[in-house]
Length: 474
Image (cartoon, rainbow, N blue to C red; front, side, top):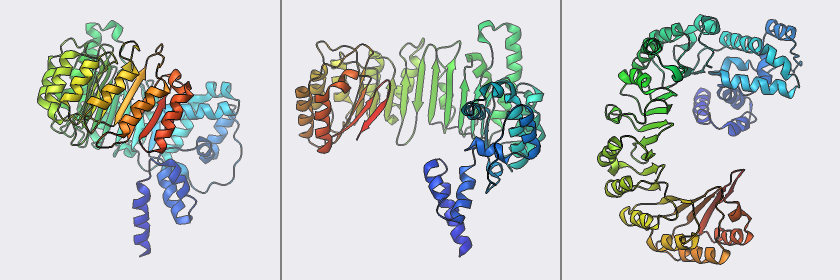
């Protein structure tokens, strides 16, 4: 019975892995709860001061010889390093630097950071039993930097998440391909200088990327694959053998092309999310039973694949993002995306007729975003009238984004009329009003007082996202 209780408790606390505050509370319940919780809490390093005090005397001596003072601490209750499952060099560098900056010894840290990092990693690899997540920096392209991981390769057999640059030491990727087939999340960032892509460089890049292609193709449970800062031709080599298990695919900040052929999505039967963004265009699509998204910029060199995608898949899409207003795509959305719930097509408050069309053609629409680019003829008062009179019965969220130089002209009397009219709508639904970037709206105490009145009545939920801070009133 006791064993059963322990197993059940472990299963329950396991669900709190991402809830740091609750996990810390669990530590204080009793000894059993503490033992279970601390193992989950320390899967990633929570306190670098504690970690340094876990180091063996030899490592502490090396740090002291490099001018780093280590304050004696009370005996530790656990060997926290043994619970670690995640190593991120970016996080490690930032936290160690913060720690020594706090101790006013940042100059010493800058001259000794490699020594500190090396001793911490060496200690972690000697203590942990297996690694789940690894995040390497761009400089890990040499055997010397990768030596510790190659020596302890048995710890990486069950790796589930890897973030690295394309110039990572090739032998490491080759060995990983041979022994590890459990990666679920793989994020690769290109380290190629795309400003001078000669034929010789392209040939070298192509040969190197075959190694990554093999790594990708051998993963049996790959769910999320991300390429960042790759050119189109680089990505083309990498995507040749993507496993059908893939659910999310991302191509971020790419070079050399304004689009990726959408037939890539159709070849992946389990794909639910696809993201593409570059300096020229952005595209995001998500296919899911409950929550489908699509987004793009309208300045595609070839919009036909996007139009075809909408025609073929639009009936399944629930959430639609288009980063620029485009009448052609708007017509396609209204005709083929009848089940859309959330809409962001970069509409402005002067596109009143387009907004009315969306309201009429999308009967399930619940949320829309309006960019307040001008407060002339079609100001907030007229916008509110259109929403009250034309929005479909399920509509319940209005997002207003104010540009840098746009000041709200809304007065409390107009806001009161809008919220009173909304309160009388049938069916009655609480309205979520989201305001972004309008200091004039925030500073108008009359508007805030009206909103607080209707919050108390249960008619409205209100959020302000300012450029400097976020305020929630709901």
